[in-house]
View 1: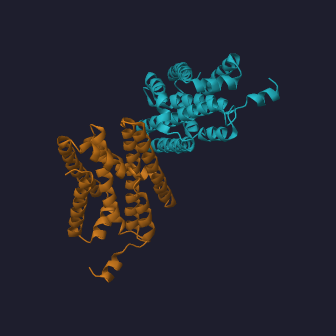
View 2: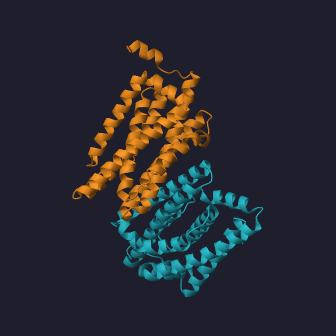
View 3: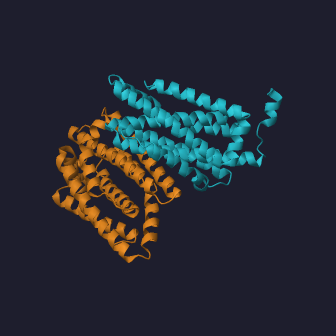
Length: 228
Length: 228
C-alpha cells in the first residue's frame, strides 16, 4: 500500500464505526487495568517480604491511575466505563482462571508475560488511531515498574535452579497460547473492534504478520527473564 | 493540669524517647495502610457490580498514596519503613484472621468500623505530637471515600431485613472487642509508644477516658450504618 492509499484509509473522527471500535478498545484496556490491579494486589499478598509487598501494592495503585484516565476518556464520549467493560469481563476472567498461578514466581511470570503481550498488541493498534487516542493508549501502557522487579526476582530464583527454569519456561509458553486464544475470542465477538484491526493491518496477511511479531517479542521477553 | 504545665510536658524534637514513639506510631500507621489496601483490594474482588469493584479498587489505590507519604516521612528520619513496620505485622494479621468476613456486607462493616476506630485512636494521639507530625497523621487519616460507600450499601441491604441487621450488629460488637484486644497488645509490646500515650493522656485515668470515647464513637458509627 503506498502512502496516499494509507492516508485514505486513516480513520476520521466522523466515522461512526471507527468510534465504536475505539470505545471497545478503550473499554478492553480499562478492564485490563482493573484486572491487573486485582492480580498485582493478590501477588502483593503472597510476596515473601514486606518490601516486595509494598512494591507490588504501589504498582497496583498505579494501574488504577491509568484506569481513571480511560474512564474519563470514555465519559467524554458519553460512555459509562462499567457498561462498556462488561463484554470483556468474561474472556479476561476465563484467561485468568485457566492460568491461575501456583507460586509467587508463576505469578510474576504471568504478570510480566501477560502485560508485555497486551502492551505489544495495543501498541500495534494504537498506530492506526487518531493522534489523541493514540497518545492516551500509549500513556496508559506505561510500565508501572513491575517489569524490572519481575526480571530481578525471576533471574535470581532461576540462577542456580535448572529445573525451576524449565518449569517456568513451559509456563510462559502456556500463557502465550491461552492469551492468543482469548484475544481471538474477544476480537471475533466485537464487530467494530475486529473491523478496526482488519482495516488497520490492511488484510488477513497483515494480521498474520502482527501475530508473528507478537510471538517473536514474547520469545525475547522470556529471554529477559532468563527463561526459554 | 494548667496551661503552663501542659506546655512543659509537650514533646520536644530533641527528646529521643519521644522520637522513638513517633517512629512506632508512623510505622503502625504505614502497616495499617498496607493492610487496608489489601483488604479493600480483596473486597473489590467480591464486589457484586463492576461499579463497586472500580470504586473499591480506587479507594485501595488512595491508601497506597498515604502509605508513600509515611514511607517518605520515615525515610527523612533515616528509618526504613519495612523494618519499622515489622513488629506491627503480627498483631494486625492476628486481628485480620480472627475477624475474617464471610460476606460482602461483613467486609464492608469491618472496613468501616476498623478504619473508624483506628482513625479515632490516631487522632487522639495526634493531639500530643509536634505540629509537623500531627499534620502528617491527620492527612493520612483522610477518608478515601469508603465510608459513604459502605453506609449506602449496608443501609440499603438492611432496610428490609431485620435478621441481617441483627447479625451485622453482633459482628460490629465482635470487631470492637478484637480491635481493643490487639491494640492493647501492640501498645504493651512497644515501650516508646506506650510512654507516648501515657504521657499524652496524662495518666491511667486519661487512658480510661480515651477508651470510653473510642467506644462511644463506635456506637455512633454503628448507628450511621443503620446498625446497633
